Length: 261
Image (cartoon, rainbow, N blue to C red; front, side, top):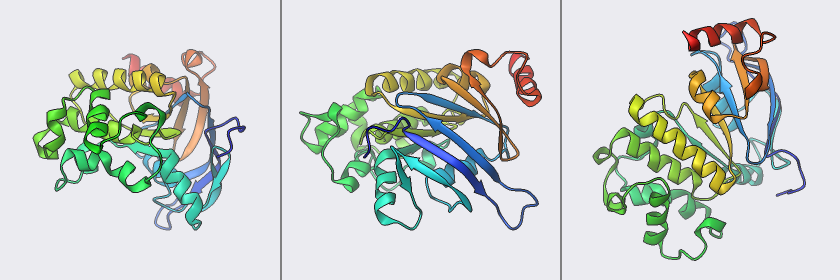
């Protein structure tokens, strides 16, 4: 890892097309994320947010563009760079039930990244040695009692399962976590608690986030900078405090009108 580079994640001209579509799903998307920064990405359903996530995680091969993690270019066909990606980038998705294997106990799902990576423990886990103690500590970080370690996913609420997904994502102390609509499937009463926990963990572990949502209120709360996506393109970028300026793109203003209404 090159620690002298300015960006945790840098994307250059990422493009993804599907033969069945009349337009590009992702059209030359470029952005950078600094260490400890949360970058918000807002867009309506069908704007290309989820396709972008799949490209960033190399779950789908982009047609064009480059992805850099800590200055290292990640290539779809290169095993070593894919190892870097799996170690440095984690994700939390919208549906926590789909993210957890229903046949595995919570402890086994929670410990999966550490079990697979087989690297030295991250700094915040130093001094915690036993597997069960590590799992217990991770659950404590997301405010879930240790008794749930031996439960199965169906025995937890949606909010609890999403907290487990967050604990799993931070377990190897990645450089960046992609949060793809992390509260969209949860009750309103639970959403604020999850967002506050994510903010606390970011400050505690100096994490970087790509926070993706159609909810401007959540993005405004979580992010330092905001990007607006429409039809596969980034059509507006700004610091959070500039989001409500009159100079914003008309589509941004339209989203803000819906948000304020």
